[in-house]
Length: 321
Image 1 (cartoon, rainbow, N blue to C red):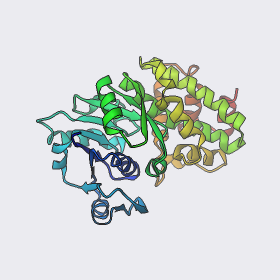
Image 2 (image 1 turned 90 degrees about the vertical axis):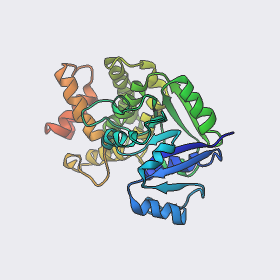
Image 3 (image 1 turned 120 degrees about the horizontal axis):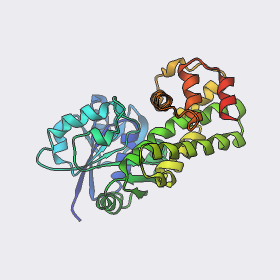
Image 4 (image 1 turned 90 degrees about the horizontal axis):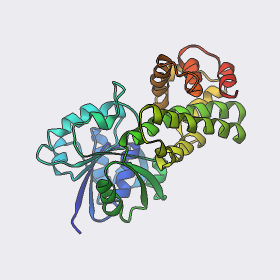
């Protein structure tokens, strides 16, 4: 079997974790591209990413570089950088792939700065989205992990059979890339919604009350965006929402829990990125403008709490009706 060259854009927590797993397949040549010089140096000299996983040795076949020309060698490119940076980054790397058409897979969870889906804005013709219930530390530790691959059937089969062979990573499939992107964006917002009631009540009953409402609202958004509603039943839908909304390793859930316990949200400012905070503003304003408040009560309650000065008690009364 021929060697497959994969360039993972991003040497952070998840970029490192997914690179490690892809390197389990000896037919994959995996290169991490990072703008962080210390990350590149430690991976190449010590087989460690000292910045993000200081105690962990990585597969010795992994290499790293800050040189953009590496993208000219890529058969596949995994985008694992902050969502707001992906569109300009993709335009930059396109210069190095002009004579070929690599498969570009977006793993970032968010929208571009103008509120568009990332895969619709990047200048490549072969694009896909891969999202699912996947904490980075568990991916790095080798636990079985699942994603939904949003994209063409032939690209899904390539990734499933060739790239993921012997990695312990598994996929389900959806043709609708936008649906996969949308569910991954929405789940962070709804994880905050669940975290808020968890912080106040610490009750599985209440958690799943809100979880069920969140699933229904996510399906409502899929319909609103004319996406495939059945994607809610994929790994990227109820799977990722369950992981993010009900597990305390989740940043977005923890953010909500802290507010539920009485801590201020400080306009979402934190050393840790809270992806769902920006999403609340975006979807709160959109549903309000379109007079859809009654169809999306969780979103509206979150929006009032985060951006209009509503109290925690008012939020709880609104979502527990």
